[in-house]
Length: 222
Length: 205
Image (cartoon, rainbow over all chains, first blue to last red; front, side, top):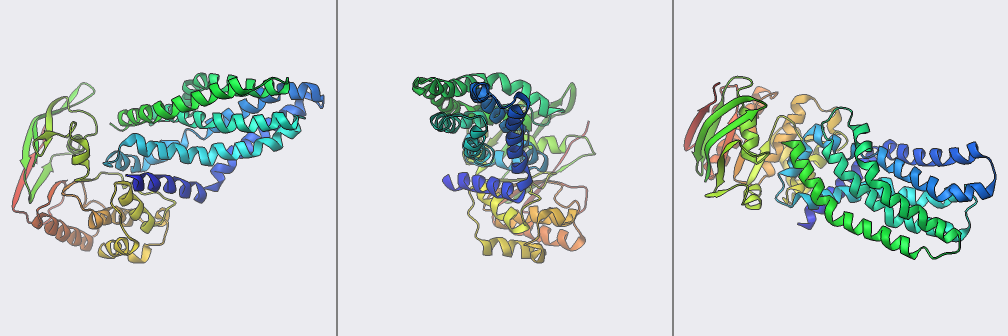
């Protein structure tokens, strides 16, 4: 049972490694979008550090989203998704491996890059720490929730935009608690409540999203 | 072992077929024949459990395949129109990974000998992207050489193959059937496959 799970995970990571340009697109998108704001707004560090939590979280959210459409589309087009559905292992388990691979490839690099971007916004060290922690807790929820949208729009024309319309409203709670955690720490308050709520969202998504995604995939492949 | 009763398939408001039924026991071979668009592939997909039939049921060892999913899928190998190969993986990796994904731990040596059997061992380390249509099909078919399943459902397995490969595949099918396996295939070609019992199912509008 675990061996099939690891096979899917390793396969997706290997494929991502062979197509490194796809990962680079996500990362550059994140870097460029978040660098545009300081350029446009100017060097007033008070303004920059006020908008930083929201802007960085929105950038991370959009960066994760542009790679969503690719999550199942290639597997669907070449038939390997069919074969995955015919595996005796529970589909939601295999799907969870794919989601983890997506997060490792698109979510984790954003988390790791965030401190560098945070410096552009004159964020204090403590706030940068909280930013990284909040992204680390929150971005898995983005991959998990996004997977449902990606599975639902499989084989639909113009699915890229449709995923955005489906998924972005569901990202709102993650965005709110993520950004609030960082600004709470900027104002000398404890971010613990926001981080706990963020963790709760991620855990809930971890339980429900693979099941919902598996059900959506079955409908798409029918 | 595998039985279908009163299957019907609707595509939109078009009835593709109805009252389709058969029983397939160990060593049995079922040809599904019919013109293009008569619902052959839809029938095979239905037998794999992709989507529910409009009416009727598919039974494996007497139990509905929807209730008994795990037991059924662990005995099933399906090869559809799509090969299920990743362009960025080599032929060998494709074969090994797709076997492992269904829980069949295939070693590199086993995978290589399967590729040798279908005559593409020298392409083993080439990415699938550079293989020809027929070679890709053969990589997908090599999965049948590593499969440990009983029931093979093959959609046009002989399409895009050259004469030599068709013979090799037919011989492999013979061996599978002789050892108590089952196979359901669609084909437009005359291929000599010997089975203990051969049935033909003709879908007509």
